[in-house]
Length: 276
Length: 291
Image 1 (cartoon, rainbow over the protein chains, first blue to last red):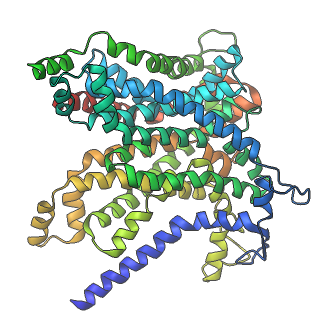
Image 2 (image 1 turned 90 degrees about the vertical axis):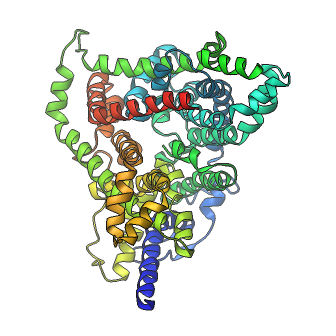
Image 3 (image 1 turned 30 degrees about the vertical axis):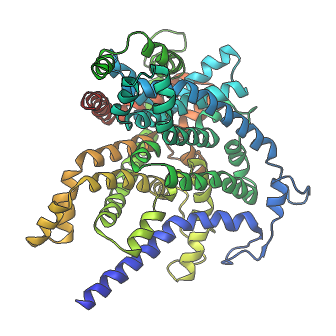
């Protein structure tokens, strides 16, 4: 009995080590490269480390020697796009989530279908044809054009997450408020909205990250004039490994923070609809 | 009385208000998604003179046929491997308790939230001939230091997809496994079922819906992913359809062939997409009626 327990435990330990290597191996490569000043094959670790590329990327130092440029402009572009997209998406997606959760409308199937299609089919051809339309409207290569693409991509997630948030509120609570004389608007503002708030917050965070990390749509609509962080990462990954690694880590940090936030605010049921 | 009217209002559809609330989002989706989606199929059948033709598909047949099958092969292989990893992981997390299981349960989700562009950059440095993986394997003596593994091809692409998709699939599969009541597992164990039997005969059959959803979403996402193949293998031969589409558009401005390739990528996922859409739309309508 004791021996089989030991066997199970060492099996688990082996699995844990393999899993850790599988998950953290690729990530640790990024961290090492972001601080590597000199790293020649076949050395296991960089021969010389330092924060030179970090300082240069964050605009704290300017040196021509290491050929890295600053990320601050791209960071600001990404941030402005993401914040505006979050604001617009929350305003137009939250009502849809509410209607889908609380009303039995005609053609509901068609509306559900419209908001599920982007998950069920590849999106790249849509971006390609959007580029043709945006060329006509003068939106190609502009920040508003990129915002519209991010809007389309993240709207779907915002609708599903907010719909789940509203669905999880028992209708009895709203009916109780109505029965003691509260108006429909007051019931929504004082009962429904506060109860849905954690889900809506999660939705906003998710939209923010979707916009911040969006690559394919920005590639077709934004290049070469709109350089978001993922575009800068892409363009530098060919010639400056350290700089690309720094940007990759800058994009990673919000996703780690997000993990912490969902641990604290979200029930497991939301996450299923999220990572998609 | 008030309760009755509230219920009636909910059931009826609430008149005009819901439509007003839907209007902006639905309008945007029609303009920015549905219209380009339909026109991608329509334009794939437009010849150079604007008449309907299959010339674009003939060109795909001539130039990109190998890539069409490469995309399909990579997607099937990665999804199958990710399914195996995710089911094993989910089964372990469902059936184990204790320190190890809790720790693994905390860390396995990590890749789900990492964007593809970062995954691509990671894999480029990790899998390169002089990358961390080769250095590590050389250190423990599995690889000759002068002949490192060449992984920046279909192998690395598959590894990258599995890395990103397996945890996501495990999350969905685990939510299915957790719905299986403990009594079923205990009953099977008490009549002598071993661990593999519990997984194959109890957990998997009882979570068929979650497993299908996980498979479909992972496969569709893999077929449609542009970032990872573009940054990892780029214009190598063979490459994926998504890379070809980008080349066709950015180098040649050839939207006809790009759309023919795009339409073929819709076809690759068509059966699964229809199954998923029917399942989810029905569930959405049914859930409302129930609640």
